[in-house]
Amino acid sequence: MLRRLMISAALVGTLFATIFATTAAYAEQFARVGDYEIHYSAVNSSFLTPEVAQANNLQRSVNRGLVNVSVRERQEDGSTRAVNASVQGHVSGLTGVQESLSFRTVHDGDATYHLAPFTMREDESMRFELSVRYDRNAAPEPVNFIQRFYIDR
Image (cartoon, rainbow, N blue to C red; front, top):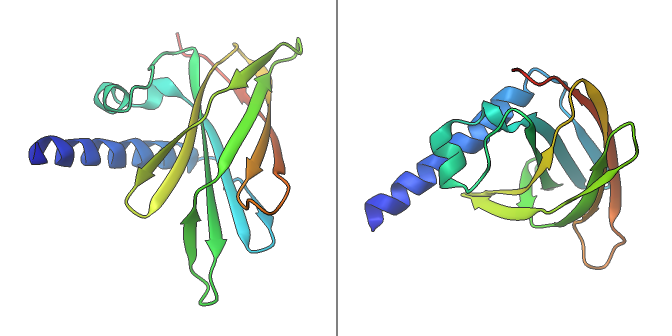
C-alpha cells in the first residue's frame, strides 16, 4: 500500500513537471490580483506520458488538451503559497461553439492544481474564459486567454 502511494505521488509530480516543462516555451502566463497570482496554461494532452495520464485518469490524445490553473498568494517575506480555488469556465473556437470545462483539484505536496480537459480544434485559435474564485468573500476573477493549437498527426 505504501509503495503504491509512493508511486502515485511520483507520477503526479511527473505530471506537473511535464506540464510546466511544456509551458516553459511559452511566456509565463498569470494574472496578478492584489496579493494573488493566478497562473494558467493549456497544453496538448499527448505531451503527457502514458503512465502519468493513466495514474491521473487523464485522456491522452492528439486532439485533447488540458487546462491547468493554480493560485498563489504572496506572503510578506516575498514567497508565495498555494491557495485552493474554485475554477469554472468554457473554451470556444472561431465558430463560437462553447465547451464547458470541468475542473478537478489535485494536491501535490505544497502545490494545488485545477485541471480540466478539452477538445482541441486543428490550427484554430481557442478562447478560454475562466472564472477563478480564490477568496470566498470576493467576486470571482475573470481570466481570459487565446491560444492556438496544432494537432500532430
